[in-house]
Length: 59
Image (cartoon, rainbow, N blue to C red):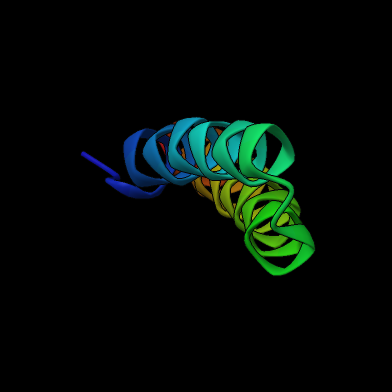
């Protein structure tokens, strides 16, 4: 089992929360960090999905 998709989704959700908190408080730095976390999470999920496709193709 590949953990990347699950961890990626978790990072994406945490990034959304952080972005929203930054937007509500007017903290641009937190907002930007949240967006970065979302990008990281989506990338990690995509990588994990690709790994699973490759593993399934091998079987």
